[in-house]
Length: 468
Length: 162
Image (cartoon, rainbow over all chains, first blue to last red; front, side, top):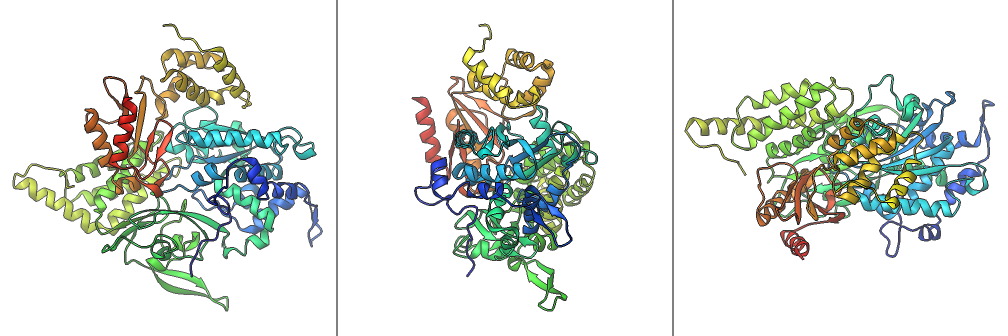
């Protein structure tokens, strides 16, 4: 039976569990940090010697941990790119700017178990020779910022943080930095600009890869809240043991945020790939199905910038058989394992782990108009195709929802979206274009029908009105 | 009234600035603190921040105009942010906004924050507040109202009028 596997959220919702350090310590808190600091050097079979910090970095690499923020890139590899020879300080930034529509998992950690994040961060700092780290929390979480500041004070008072942590002679400090309502700050180079006190205009890569030229042009690691929490568990379990959770190349657990037209929206921590998209929506342990009498229309599987999936879609998935041979199997949308690779093979992504469900009462034109308005509002304005195109698409869709549709609007929208993707400094261009490309391509009839209906209404002299 | 930052707040800001190897980094935190204290960010607040951090006023002003949470005009005592984004929209957030706008006599066609003439309330449609599982959500000042209903909105208005 598909069920939750709570690693990160093990304690968060237990009755009586509070965000203070005493409670965290009673639940074994900061033991992983002590364990990490006591790591012994290791000699590899080839005679290469790893120092204690390299051992931790190696464990993270071995764990297979992939970033939980959206891109799903190997966390261990990301760490391995850090320029350790520049002589400049190395910075760590926790990306707590949770803003991808549909996502509300980091909120749970930040508000219910802030010390878990802090412990993960201290270990990550130590393993990467970081002395100064920041938590960039979104501006709309003022209580989260206060809780974190309180937790940081507690950690300093107990000697886990600050000068000479746990008598090691090493100083590590973490500060909270608040954003101010801009989605683009979740993009790591935009976040870095914002942390430098500027407008959050993403930087062009190359050359500004954070691992080399990040905060203050120094090597910088930017990791998501949930990713950093996993580091603590990798230290506790060991990388190889951690990698047994989940499925190959999709290891560990992740928190899925489920919202939209389901009976029980909420967050569910699952072993990656052990639960299907259909189970997340329909199983009683998760979403509990659609409302009575309704049928499925569409699923946004990984935050609003991921490409939409249409009910009834079938996909060809490559599967590794018991004999090691790759075979192709056909899978229904609802049978897709909820992991990084399967959704990628289905032409979309699991992104930030946010599933938004739409039933048959929803008009896809209205839904896309809503999504596009978000991207029009949040474009930072730096690149012309995105600044103009995102607004343009939003205006066309707004026109379509207020009686001004045309039959050719579907192709018109596709044309604009195709001229944004690949032509911008950061991935926001894709984030704005993908919903339009996927919705219009998969539901083209709906868009054309709506446009034609408006045209004939206008031709017969009917005053345009909003459809809903 | 001349612009003056109380000593306690200035001390707090100096402490914040010490968190960064480069003072300019503290500008967002300065603006948050000044907006919290004064209710909005005046030209004087921008100039004062610039001077404290060794910047040109434009370096600070361009932040005020870029980040949606920063305000150049005073807002109402009760600030109501209704989430507009998809999951909340599916759960009826447009109706919540329409209800609030109607009750307060504001203009439903206007974009951006709107404040009642008596300065009691500001209503605004905002983008995703990251609580989609409990949609629709509304932020009232610093508090998050989850699974917010029309009746909850009425309670917010009644409390704000007291």
